[in-house]
Each structure stands twice: as C-alpha cells, then as structure tokens.
Length: 218
Ligand code: SAH
Image 1 (cartoon, rainbow, N blue to C red):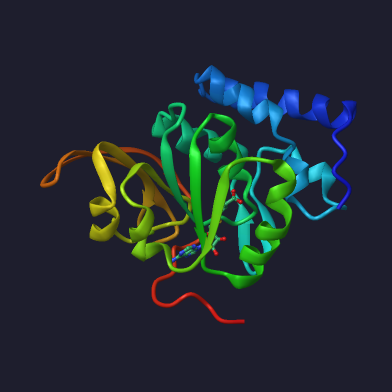
Image 2: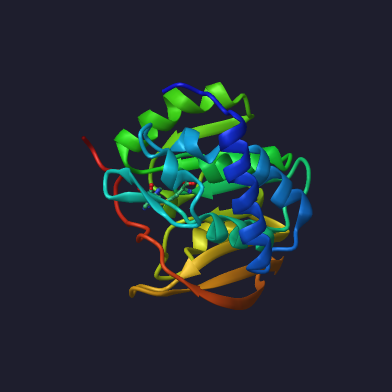
C-alpha cells in the first residue's frame, strides 16, 4: 500500500472532521488527532473515496472499521489523558488504536481474527506509535499487563466481563457498546473502588459482535 497523504486526502479529511464536529463532538485534541491520521491508510487501496465518508467500511474477515463519528464518540467518552495506559479490544484495522496513541496514550490492543491481527501487525509499525498488538480473546483482557487506566471495547458486548473490571485501576473507565441484538447502548463504567462501579448509558449504536470463546484459528 502506498502511504501517500496528499492535499486531496487532507482536504477530504478536514471536511470529515467538520462533519463530526457538527454532529456534536467537542473534544478539540480528539478532533485534531482525527484530522491528523490518514484514515485511507486503513482501508484497502482502491477505496479512497470511501475513507472520508462518515460511514463504517468492510476491512475483511466480516469485520468493519467503525464509522468516524462512532470512533470520535467512544474516544470522547474515554477522556483520554497523556500517558494513559489503554487496552483496546477489537484492533480491526488499527485506526482507533492510532487515534488513542496520537492522543498520547500507551495502547495495548487485542484482535481475535488472525488475518486482521497479521495485517495490523505488518502495517502498524509504519505509523510509528507505541502500540502493542496481541492475538487473542478480548473477553479475557490482558492480565499480564493489567491494570489499565481505560479499556475501550470496539465490538458489541452482551455484558461487561468481570475480568475486565478487575483489570481496571480504581478511577479507571470502560467504554463499551452493550447489547446482544442489532442495536447497542454506548455505556461507560467507572470503577470507584474494587467493589463499587458507576454505570452511565449514552446513545444507540450498531457494532459487529464481540465473539466469545477461543481466538479463531485460520
Ligand atoms: N477498532 C477497529 C474496529 C473494530 S471492529 C478499527 O479501528 O478498525 C471489531 C473488531 O473486534 C473486529 O476486528 C473483530 O474481529 C474483533 N473482535 C470480536 N470479538 C473479539 C474478541 N473476543 N477479542 C478480540 N477481538 C474481537
């Protein structure tokens, strides 16, 4: 893939950011980060005209890169601070991981589809962010690297797994679309203490499902 980011790409990206801003995203550092990262790098070449539409797009293995507005919405709820240690579940194309890293976070990301994991592992080093990629089942989290300041789940979870709550620092947050049907409710869980959690529900979204059990072999 040619990693060219020219004036046309930058112009399209600027328009996309304005669109997202109009839809209600107010986090300026986040909008700047999204304005900086070339989303077309994360789509197969030939789909350039789709990269800067505010829509999800297929990335192979039946998965999608989330709609830019959705990426912005989830990231805004996560209140990313510099040096935050963040676990992302559902690497997919790696786009969301790069947004978190551009905001100064140390990112750990897990993917269960081997082909997507391999693709991200080959491509992401070119972006030069401190992102660590793992192949495995996100339901289990990443116990050897826990605890995390934040956990971001980018697939629809029928419930919030207890192990993920355990892998969160006190004061930490999980942002996750919760629901087992077609539509999920964006949810933010804040860990007040080891036994005390606060849950706030936000808007409705549509994600691919977070799949349980073993990581897929292929
Ligand atoms: N964040 C991605 C989009 C994610 S789509 C991006 O920026 O492109 C959701 C991803 O979650 C898919 O790639 C899917 O394979 C992955 N996924 C589903 N269940 C999972 C699980 N249990 N553990 C890890 N990844 C999972």
